[in-house]
Image 1 (cartoon, rainbow, N blue to C red):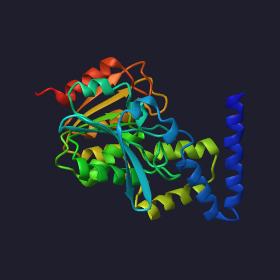
Image 2: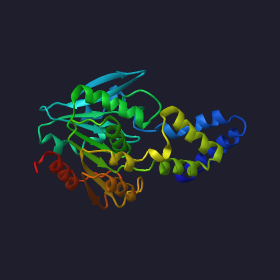
Image 3: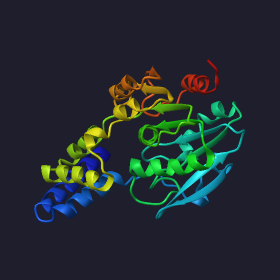
Image 4: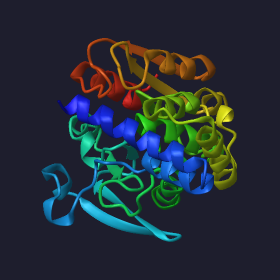
Amino acid sequence: MKKLIYFLYTKSAGLYINLLSFIFPIKATQIAYSLFSEPRDGRLTKSNLPTILQDTVSETFHHNEHHFQSYTWKGNSNVILLVHGWESNASRWENILPYLQKSGSTIIAIDAPAHGLSSGKEFNIPQYAEFIHVLFQKYNPKHLIGHSLGAKTCLYYQSVYQDNDLEKMVILGSPSDFNIILNNYINLLSLNSIISKGLEKHYLKSFNLQLENFSGKLFASKIKTKGFIAHDTDDTVVLFEEGKKIASSWKDSIFIKTTGLGHSLHDDALYTKIARFLFETE
């Protein structure tokens, strides 16, 4: 029944947007973009924080017209920054924390735009990367770990900002080609060519991005930092081939194939490998 309701909702929304596009194409494109970029899950409230985030030093940063939240588990001078993905929040890192804390490092997790306690209704990677840059300027992390769209944001961040002090990156379940994500959305709602072209123009105008160039594979090709890439063969959210694309262009990286973990990639054996990659000297 839930699947039927979801199917009817998506097709009804798509039909409305398509009909509106013939009369008010700009308005229809704006609605389509809002539905695409606004997460429906992942929000938090200060009065009901997950337990793992309650025992942290929380900090609110103001950047342009937005604010974003960070959570710090204090340790030594080595700083690790954790970047979650779509419809999630900083609490998603609970399972990996013990493996990272064994090193004694200071660990910082961030809430993405429109997630957790951060402001906004829209998630986009360039803005997320700006938030990350604010934390890099203040805390100078040596290690960066991202999951899903948070992982792609890490790739985008390092390819654009080229932080020479960043020593190692861990990329988990990252998509590569943005066109695939956008086309899946267009197909889900059965949107017409007016809307698909309008969305492409929106990204070019708002973010100065050609969609074919908004690629994790392309970002990775510009990164000199050491990389650890993991992707699961049973990932139904981001296909396994996406991880292979990123690994193929990242010269100084290792690629770990897992099976049976799905998109979340929560696994003790994998966390042990990540810790070994980050903290063991070669």
